[in-house]
Amino acid sequence: MTKKTIKTKTHYNFNDSWETLLENKAFVNAFLSEVLEDYITKQRWYGGKASKLKYIELSEYFRIQRDGEVYYGLILEVNFEEAFYQHYFLPIAFVSDESFAQEDRILSISIQNQEGFIIDAINLEAFRKLVFERILTAIPNDLTRVQYHKSILFNDEYESSRFMGLEQSNTSIVYNESFVLKFFRRIYANKNPDYEMSRFLSEKKQFKNTPAYLGSLSIVDSDNENITIGLMQEMVPNEGDAWDYMLKELEKVFETLETKNIDIAQLPETELFERLSIRDVPPRIIDWVGLNLFLKVQKLAERTAEMHIALGSEFEETAFTPTHFNGDYTVWLKNRLLYQFQNRLNTVENNLHKLEDLSLELAHEFLDNKNDIRKRLVNFDWTRLKGERIRVHGDYHLGQILVKEDDFYILDFEGEPESTIRDRKVKQPPLKDVAGLFRSFHYAIYATIFNNSEQYKHEQQELFDAGELLYTYFIGVFLKTYIEKIQDANLNIGYRQERIFLLKYSLLEKAIYELGYELNSRPLWAVIPLKGITNIINHK
Image 1: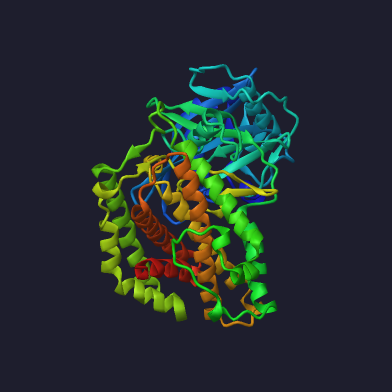
Image 2: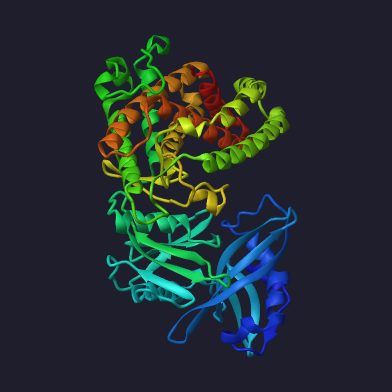
């Protein structure tokens, strides 16, 4: 909120001390009804922009304090006209410095005749330092309402802190240029999956290719639920994420089509889901794509397999013990997907006017095939599946993977944004993550074609054909490494036909999920999930 907007607000004056201000009902009512709605709807982390806000309630508040220094953590319940609600975490501080946080003030206020402002406390270095030191000095088995936890790996003194940068749903703080504390903004009445998975992989399984868990901050609410507010992890020095890396590499791959004047129609093909070692990839494909990119795909497959092996090797902690397919899971899966599919059908029908050429053709094909697609979603016979379900990443794509030298680090285990917190914790076939990564490969290929189309002499359809061919080779090389590593560790992901069935099912599910996003935000790109759906429907 800008300084100018704040000046037009009513100026409030309260005689309560800052330490007792939230016990004043008049303050709380004014804060929630007159001020906060305007502030919150402008924040990047606010996830209700597509819905109509009805009112905000203060669900919980608690103190984040040390040695007389007091801040408040607010749990806000945002209620919408569409009869649902979301919870958000907002820490607040009172500052009297006129020059401070001019762009992020919530309310102009006098407290016991001291002029000042209420701001988001994350703007204050003193607050960031306090949270750091509370985690650093956390006691084991903290039973207070506001709970801090520290890993044995975390022993550093506070030196500095800064915002990490622009993020959508959370706010991350970099400490000492070595650690990252992620404050969860949209929160759930349960332990956050990112906290659970990070701590499990790092502390219990010593999985090295994820940022090490260092500590956390949580509160116990009035219903005795443990709510994760913050997650502290090591900061992995990196060269960016795998999405940007892949785009740069693919740009070279498509430039090579031009510089080597490659006849795309003459390139040797391979079968979708055929497992390939690099020796199995024809020399003409290696000559076009380069060996390095296939080696990187292999490395990604190794790290993905190691993550799943760690997640599937637990026999004590019930939240992580592997389990088999059953009727309850099947009912949950079908209900969820059929609801989502119906939603996407409506979205496609309502957005046909935004589509043209191949996108429009594929959208009509999607609508013509709706009964076949629905049948595929319903056709999930758990009695024929012998593999295991485990906790999975749940939102696994190239943007969730950091590149460091010749290696990859996996992060952000929060799960699929559209899913409820309970759905994110349901054990799934590990191949669901693999399918998510495959869809990300598909996206990276098409994004490269779209972003650079004016540079290429080939027709767009020819480039799409080359992209689809490259995609099948990526999948083949990935699967060979991934399946061998998984089987060596005795994690049961099913027999060959079962694996292909689960991959196709998960790829279809993921592409249907993506379709809604693309049609609502960038219709030009709807061709990518539509092509993914067509590939699966037409694959025998």
